[in-house]
Amino acid sequence: MGLALTKGRFCARLTTHLGDIAAAQALRHESFHGHGGLDCDGFDARCLHLMVEERGTGRLMACCRIMPVNAGRIDESYSAQYYELSELKIFEGVMLEVGRFCTLPGVADPDILRISWALLTRYVDENNVEMLFGCSSFAGTDATLYRDTFAMLNARHLAPKRWSPRVKAAEIVRFGNCPARAMDVKQALLRMPPLLRTYLAMGGWVSDHAVVDEDMGTLHVFTGLEVAAIPPSRKRLLRVVAA
Image (cartoon, rainbow, N blue to C red; front, side, top):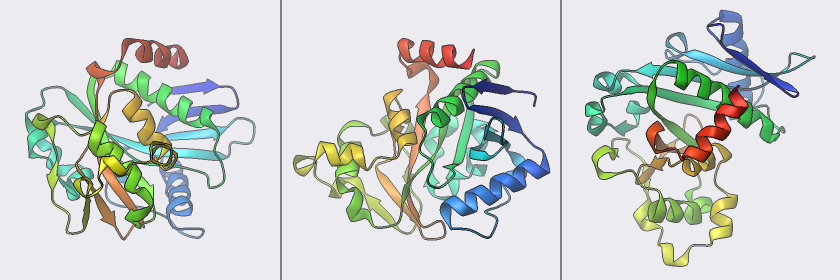
């Protein structure tokens, strides 16, 4: 790809090199399942892989994968395995699926997320992407831990009707069962994954339910972000970091 960025302690790049993909698969397995394996599926070969590495050591700190998607073929996306996305087939712009974002366990440096978004911003600008989408994951499958967060999503961040994902998965948690009147805002924000928080701060939206993914040991929500909806001030900040 040749797309790369260096900021502070970290460098980020896009790659399709088999050795890099194997390293990403190992980090994903460590993050989602623990040591000693590879997290891989048939989508890896179709994706570009974003790698965030520590300068000097070359240690892989975070990764995710991105895949351009034609709206008419959104049923072939990873997310479509879990959500009925027929409403999005009429979206006219270029779409980009972002998935499997994870960081090295025990590392919580906000600059990792910043440089990841900066490189994504470059890709979005250079390829005229108009919507990003994917599955935002919550650790574990105990929905009671996230009742406040789900109530907040239901009250403030649901998808526009014209794009709203429908239920497809067998095991889900409906946000309507989490009443906003009992919501603890502090707990809602505390338990919200940082990546999802960033999407929402830029004008993103979510499905009206979470999917229980026993294979990954997570709950996840479909997340969409229309590039045109990102506030101008946020776009300027992203492009400054991406410069």
